[in-house]
Image 1 (cartoon, rainbow, N blue to C red):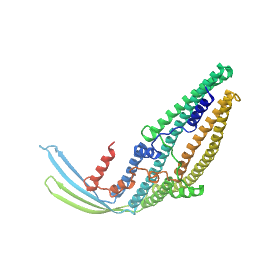
Image 2: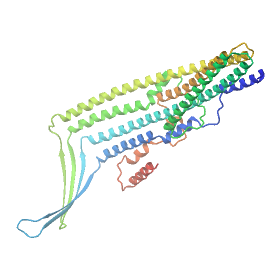
Image 3: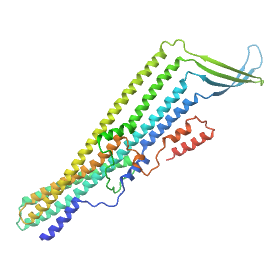
Image 4: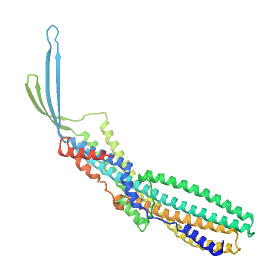
Amino acid sequence: MGRMQKAVMVGTIISGLIWPMVSQAESLADALADGYENSGLLAQNRALLRAADEDVAQAVSSLLPVISWSATATAQNPRGQTGNTLTADVQITAEFTLYDGGRTQFAIDAQKELVLGTRQGLLAIEQDVLLRIVQAYMEVRRQTQFVGLRENNVRLISEELRAARDRFEVGEVTRTDVSLAEARLAAARSLLSGSQGELARAQAEFIASVGRRAGALGAAPPAQIAHSIAQAREIARRTHPRLREAQHSVTVAELNIKRAETALQPTVTLNGRIRLDQDFNDSESIGVTASGPIYQGGRLSSQIRQAMARRDASRSSLLLTSQQIEQNVAVAYSFLEVARASSDAFERQVSAATVAFRGVREEATLGARTTLDVLNAEQELLDARTNLISAQIDETIASYRVLAAMGLMTAQNLQLRVQIYDPAAYYNLVRDAPTVTSEQGQALDRVLESLGQP
């Protein structure tokens, strides 16, 4: 093989090694949108939010009249008499709470706060789902590029082996040089198989997080984040859903204290009844009932103290959540800075290793370098390129981790091309506790029917 032909061949292989071809591919935003719409975890937690909405409706119903009916029929056979005596009656009763010391209203307010906290919990789950998609997407990108590098490495060493055999036949190198190339080729094929296995694992994680197979994935730039840790922490303190969820939990605990205290207050209810017997004789009654505790063995006082203890625990949980969020921001930001520094360093390493490899390869064609020198230089270039790919992938993942630590890793903030789930839509339909036969109740039936469709 002539020197010019070898130089052309090596240049082609180097260009393929350093810059693998990237076809037109789907974007990270496409994967995030599909994962958002296909997530079973989000669907599960949306259903739990709707269940919390119904708790508000049930609490509201306690302020409304309770109307019920009953019917009884009794047949008697008195001793010493012939025939049966049949009695029957139908009655309708109604009950309405006039006063309970505010206990029901506190229960409603507490359930509303629970709904608000559950909404924030849903946002936190959304962040976890989207971050997992980013990690899966970038891992497929990483392993795909690794496989490309390994394939190019196998091709390059195969050419080196062929050249070593040609030179061995004319006596320019020894059998040792050929054996070295053969050993490197076997190792390169083994590493290629390992990379292909890692790519298969990354593809499986992509399917689990996005809900479909990954196609050709395009490059994904790092996320736009705060310019400093201090700014990121400030944003996290204002926007992170876990912190807001903890704040609502504290409010719920405080309302439960007031609710427990109202148990000591009397309850006044308005009662009414209409009764109709088998002879169609009717009777009506209406009355007011007042009741309240006198002594219950200290149970009510214990419940108040218990509610206070839970309030204190919620406050401590809020403090711990705040500290954890600030720590997560700092850790995520530090990983990002390390990835950025590594990426810059590996770029310089790739540049230097490329020049060195070309020089050593050219010197080898002149007989000034051995086959081992060429293989070592090629391995250094491969390692540098692999490290650069990992650093760039890690930088992108770290930027999205910072975004999640700030509380901004949501479909709305990322402006994904999806129908953003509205957590208030269902609540607005049920908050007044509509009946099944009402227009609002029928609208609810249609909503639930659409939600149940696959």
